[in-house]
Each structure stands twice: as structure tokens, then as C-alpha cells.
Length: 332
Ligand code: AQP
Image (cartoon, rainbow, N blue to C red; front, side, top):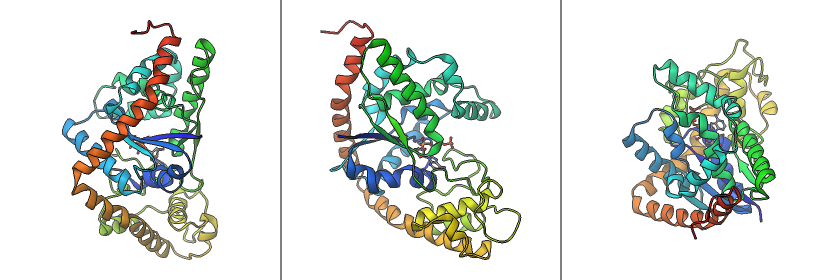
């Protein structure tokens, strides 16, 4: 059968971008059609400056939100990356397969490294090697498909290259995976800076809708979204990214087509009002379920414990095989 793997980084509170670009599809489609694993990739969150207490809090919240968004532990495996040591074991072999140059070419590395430097901080070495760990996350499970937002396409491409290279050098070990993206809203933009993606670790939060924002906060953020010059509502992603972003979000929430939706509005104000309500309504059940689950953390822990056991048992044979394939002496 098809195997699916994907994850979220607990670098901050989950956003509307995470939901529309990834999590919603995991819950509505992916968990029903394949053996699927979904992971809070906490080790990846250590690649930028972090606060331990906050990481712990945000990791738990992310796991709880995945369940609140509809991931069903009876249908799929939900776990925390650091609970399954196979990711780290395989990551090292991926570092031994990748070249320094291909890591440095990654857009996310360049952007995040620049951000860390602008803050006056240093760049952690793990930020550079991040794609090796991500490749390990994916390859350890014999993953066929990686449902992600478009911003992750380059990393999945690199993962494919590493799988092919490893297989050529050491014999067929890994499945070569491919990325899949949602049809609409594969890249939700920041409401204040519609040329950049909406990211959970952005310092300016006015343009970022978090899944747990109160309805009033969601409304305020959407109504204050930056729109473009011109008054009529038209879908022109290149020339008018702000309006196109709102139309994409509305289309994703209501199941419509952004081009067709544009024809239904003759003012930005009316469009924003409908976007705000559509987002509030879409997120309402997620927030409610999150509140219920958060009141019973031990049940979430139990899900994560079972998830980690299952993930470990799936990953171990392949990672052991990879260790042997490169010539490491079996422990016996
Ligand atoms: N804006 C987005 N639009 C569509 N999909 C998105 N994803 C993230 N942002 C958008 C998808 O959500 C999944 C999990 O993302 P992540 O945790 O790897 O990354 P992030 O939210 O971008 O978090 P960061 O790295 O903390 O954000 P920034 O950019 O602020 O540094 C992925 O499938 C991703 O594609």
C-alpha cells in the first residue's frame, strides 16, 4: 500500500498556512487512503534560537492540534520525532550522502540564516543540515508521498536525490518519495506582507492567523489585511498578491475557485468580511476540540506513546538495513 509521511515544526503556534497547506488534507484525505504517519518534528525546531519551556509547550500544543484537526489515531500514526531515535540515526547517514553545496542552496536555509544574522545571532550548524534530518524522517518509513505546502517542495526534491544516490551507491534501500501539494492555498501568504508566506515564526504577528486565535482576533487580522492598488476585485496573483491571497483563502475554506469568486465581489471590504467569517467558521470546531483535548493531556500522551512505538517498529528494519548497506558492522 501507499505510505505517507509529513510533519509540523513546533517553532511556534500553528497557522492557517499550516492548516490549509497541509494539516487539513492529512485529516480529510490522506489518513483515509494510505498508511499515514504524522509527526511533530521537534528536533527541527532546535535549528533556530529556542526557549526550552516554550518548545515543550508548543510541541504539546501542536500534537493536540493535530488531533483536534481530525487526525484519528485509529487511522494513522501521530507521534513526536524525538521519541523515535531512528530519525537521528538515519540523519547521519544522510549527511554522509549529501554534499555541502546542495545544503547551502536551500532557500529555507538562506532565508532563515539571514533572519538569525539580522537578529544578531549566530546560525546553528543544524540549520544547514536540516534537510538531511528531513530526508531521514521521510526515508525511514519507506514513504511514497509527502503532502506538504509548496515551501517544502525543494526539501522533498533533495530527499529524492539523496534516496536515488544512496540506492545507487549501496543497493536498493529506500523508496524514492514525491511531494504532493493541495490544489488551492498551497502557499498562504502573510496578510501584512503578501509577497512572503505566512509563517509561524514570524516576528510580526499581525499578518499571521493562528489556529487558536479567538474569532475576534481572526476578524481583526483579516479586515486589516493589506490589499493592492486598484479597487475592483480580480484574481491576479503576480500583480495583486494581497487580494489573490484573500481569494485563495476563501476558495480553500469554501471549496470554490478563486477566479470565479473574484467575480462575485465588487469591493475589498465585502471580500474581507466573507473571508473573515469563512476562516472563523472553519476553525471553530478545531478550537473547540483543542480545548477538550487540552483538558486531558494524559490522553494525548497515551496517543503519542503508542504512535512512537508504532513508528519505531516501522522505521527500525529499514534504518538497520541502511547501516549495514554503508558498511557499518552489525551490532549482533
Ligand atoms: N504559508 C503556508 N502556506 C501553505 N502551507 C504552509 N506550510 C507552512 N506554511 C505554509 C506547510 O505546513 C506544513 C508544516 O510547516 P512547517 O512546520 O514545516 O513550517 P512553517 O509553518 O513554515 O514553520 P516555520 O519554519 O517555523 O515558519 P517560518 O517560515 O516562519 O520560519 C508544511 O507542509 C508546510 O509546507
